[in-house]
Every structure is written in structure tokens, then in C-alpha cells.
Length: 482
Image (cartoon, rainbow, N blue to C red; front, side, top):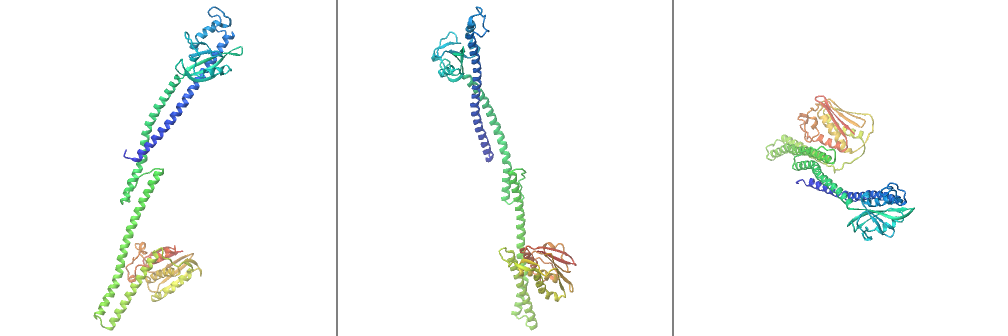
């Protein structure tokens, strides 16, 4: 059998049943033989007591059954007594012995034979002694006459209230042993049949038990080989079913993990490509400007000054890009500690509005703060929260037309920053917090694509829920739920 578990289960189950059968068989043999002997004892006792009472009746002259037989009515029923003794074995259907208190054989139903004390079964002396005390008793011993183990019952024969003899009724145990052997034979046949049936059932049960295990093994092998779509297809309401369900869940998680891994790998490639692209443009401009200055291609003082300003602008862009990358890297690192403390959220908003005021002033944009209380204590990093709000305000001012307003409201631990700018298209909304994701527009030509990603990381580190709603050419609303 190739299935090792099924083979072991079959062997264990069959061995346990075989051992159980041996125990049951042994107990059955003991109890059956004991019961058979007890039944035989009761039968022998009943017959012995009946015959002893009959003999006592003949001797006492109270029995009238045999009177008038043969030579007419005999005194004391002697005629009936003699006939009864001659047919004693036939009446008892066993060997009957009558002895006196000195263990002398008075008579035996086996006519024509003379017997001595030695012919009595073993333990006969103790039986006769107990009988002459007026008790009915039993013994098991070997009979020299019958050459076999014998069950003997002794009962008193009384006359005038006195025990005058002992009636010994004995029967070979061989018949009881034969009955026991027959019972054991029937039991053995039943046990063999049960064992054969149990082996068949154990094989069927073992295969039914190992079949789902084989499916789970095959599924595990497929999962190890990288096929995360594999399923066990085992549906059982037991521990095996729970294990199969766990393997199916594992395959789903592995498939999800592979998807996430592929997504992260794509993000990594995109990140490298985006960083390379973002760095390439200012570096190219810087290199071209420096080559032009070094080769004295440009010598006009005004042009040289313009080149210097352009190089300064590109270097500032590089500095901002590097700083944003460092900030994003730090915030994504869970080991990077931010300075958490109890702060007044109203102060953070006021500080961010003052910082964004210069840029808003250039476009004649008013930043209005609507708050319903002067103090709202939260637990967070003052500088990082100010940076988060400043990023959103910067975008709101950047994408708003001249003369519009940006509204900030604080109510029930929710901060809302709403502008009336160009808005965000529905297809762009799911990606606005991705790194380097930028909407191609004139207003966003100088952006790094990292601002909203940094704002989202700051919010996540503070367990702030961020939601965005926007309509094209109507405006955008950022909400921060503390």
C-alpha cells in the first residue's frame, strides 16, 4: 500500500480490534464456562435433591407410588425401593452413588459392578463429610472410574430426621467443556468475520481520511512551486476541513502578496525612473549652463547673470527634491521617531496660514480660517503637522486662479481645506498620493510630485483619516479627521 498513513491506520485499527477480540474472547470463555458449570450444578442439585427426597420417602414408608408393585403392598415400600435403585442412573441421567457415613458404597446404579472407595471421585470424602452435616455441596475432581474430571453434587438421605446416607450424583465435565468449545468456536468465527470486515472498513476509512490529505499535499507542492492559484477543494466540517481551509486562505494571501510584490516592484522601478527623470533635467540645465560659461560661449554680462539665476533656480529645485525624498524616506521608516506631544491644533493652522501667505499674496488669494474654538488639543508633531497643512495650502494656492479664496475650517476635530481651483479629474484621484504622480499642467510644471505623498505619510503617522473630493473647474476639498 503506497499510502503510508492509510497503511498505518489500517494496521493500528485492525491490531486494536484484534487485541480487543482476544480480551473479549478470554472473558467470554471464562464467563461462559463458569455460567455453564453453574447451570449444570443447579440441574444436578435439583435432580439429586429430588432423588434423595424420593429415597427418604421409600425408607420412611411415606412414598406410595411404588406400593403394590410386584408382590403386592410391601412394608416400607421395599419393592418400590429396589426397583427405584435399579433404575436410579436412568432416572438421574447421570452416575449415582450412595455411601454411608464411613464412606462405604451402599449401591451404585451401575449394576453388575462392584466398586471401592478408590473409585470415588477426588474430594469425595470432604463432600460426604459435609453431606452428613445435612448440607448439599459440590466438588470438582478426577474420577478414577470415569477416567475424566467430574462434577459431583452430594445431598443427604434422611430418615427420621437423621442423615443415614449420602447420595452422590456426578457428571463428567467433558460435556460442559464441549459446550464451551462450541461456544468459543462460534465466537472465533464471529471474531474472524468481524476482523475481515473491520480490515475492509479500516481500509475504506483510511483512504477516505488520507484522500483530502493527499489533495492538501499536492496543493502545498503547487504553492511551493509558485502556483498561488492552487486550491485544495476540500470541504469537510472537521479539523481536516479547517486545515484545508487554512491552506486555501494561505494560497489567497500568497496570491495577494505576489500582486503586492509586483506592484511594489513596479513602484520601485517607477520611483527610480521618476527620480532619474527629475534629476536629469536640472542636472542637464546646470551642466549646459556651466559649459556655456566655462567655454565663454556666453560673455554678455546680462546673459551671464541670467545663466547664474537659472543655475541657482535649478540647484534650489534639486535641494527641494532631495529634501522631499529624505522626508518621505524618514516618514516611511517606522523606526524614525517624530516628536509627539500635546499641541494646540489652532496654533498649527495659524502658523501654516502665515507661511502660505506670501505665495497667496502674489496671486491676490485670500486664505480664510473658520474655527469654532480657539483651542483644540491634539497629540502630534507640531512641525510635521504644519508641514502637512502647508503642502495642501501650497497646492490650493498654486491651482487657484487669481483673486479667489481658500477656506480652512476647523470643526469637531476635522480640518477642511477647500479651494476653487481647476480641480482633479476622477481618474487621477486614486493616485494623487503616489510618489512622483503629477498632473500635467502649467501650474504644476515645477512640482516634484512628492508633496502629497509626504502629507499622506505625515497623516498616517498621526493616525489621521484623509479624504479628498474634487470637481473639475470647481475646486478641491481636503478633509483631515483627527
